[in-house]
Amino acid sequence: MADPLSANARDLEAELTWLAAVLQRRLDTYFGNPPASPALPGALPPPVLVEGSSAFADLVLASRLDAGERLLLALALAPHLKPQLLDVLWSRNETTQRGFSEFGGVQAAQSGCFLPTGETACFLLAGDDLAGRLHAMRRLADSQPLVAGELLAPLVFPVGETMMAGPLRPARSLLAVIHGGDETLPEGGDAFPAQHVTTGLAWSDLVLPENTLRQIEEVRDWLVHGQTLLGAWGLGSRLRPGYTCLFHGPPGTGKTLTACLLGKLCGREVYRIDLSMVVSKYIGETEKNLARVFALAERRGWILFFDEADALFGQRTRVDSAHDRYANQEVSFLLQRIEDFPGVIILSSNFRRNIDEAFMRRFQSVVAFAMPQPAERIRLWREAMPAAAQLDDELDLDALAEQHDVSGGTIMNVVRYAALRSLVRGDAMILAEDVGDGLRRELLKEGRGL
Image (cartoon, rainbow, N blue to C red):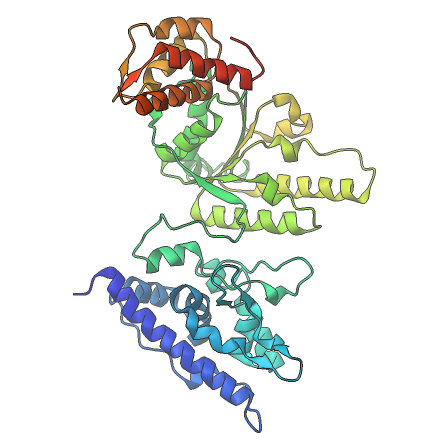
């Protein structure tokens, strides 16, 4: 019996061979004399896929894709699996002395291979038949099986380009399936404005004041029991479907770690939103980028973590220009999506005062992450020390915890510095001198002296 990767390779090879034949038929009929168009995908039937023969076959059969949808799936996969298959589309138009506009495609920056676009998909399925083109365009809509089923990534077209100029890309979940379920594949370069964040720590490693922990547990309780509350207990008609909270406090006090641990404890993936990628200087792009994130998060049950949220929630301002007006529209759009989102959203800020007070009523909870007190700092110092190293007899962790008002993030930076110095020496000893040097470095970075 073939291993999973070999089984996928066999069925994918058949699918790509079929794609090559259909593409050649399209080119032959399109440039024939007289030209014939359209040459429907059904003219060359797709390979027979057998349930259980491969993970790829099972995915295609479960998704109930027709021949046209399978062709588009194969077209998106071709640059990743057999890039030479699309080289034929580099043909030069002798009349214009450039590529054929109807072929679409862009050149990959590093590999130089042909990357298909929505235009390429339209040409493959419809040639120059306008009705067929409209049907092909509809297949690539976010609501249709290929995108809604997370087989293809949504088309994202550059500003100033046509809709079909966006690259045709396989979704990350599809790539994971064909690579044997490997979820550690690279993120890719499609500028998706959310990053999966995880932690190797456990809930028991969380060091926070008791009052803060109780508030965090409320978020955990909603993740576990929220759907029961809304559904079986009948409160869905009276409460909004999701839960939104604000984490605020100095850097390094555990806001991101807490979000990751909530996800880990409740079996949810946590995605951090990069607001610098979301908030575009181009009108309308912010809404489009956010819509992609929210749609995918809702389907997969992600926890959304907006880091440094004051970058967006602090910008509702007096309208002095068109730019101000559009900035406020973007904030309003995000607020509406947050209110409609049926999952958990966590917003993070270093300073509560940076968040517009008008937004506070929209949060189910506001959790303060204060600087750790001496009792919490001693635990942070002790648990941060690497188990493989010995501690210098002169290193007094209790005194460090008592004397220096620093965050958990600062403590980890100090320990990292001292541990690296130990590795350089090769003595597996955390020296008090190195810890002191590391602490001075961190305090200088924060504008404080030792």
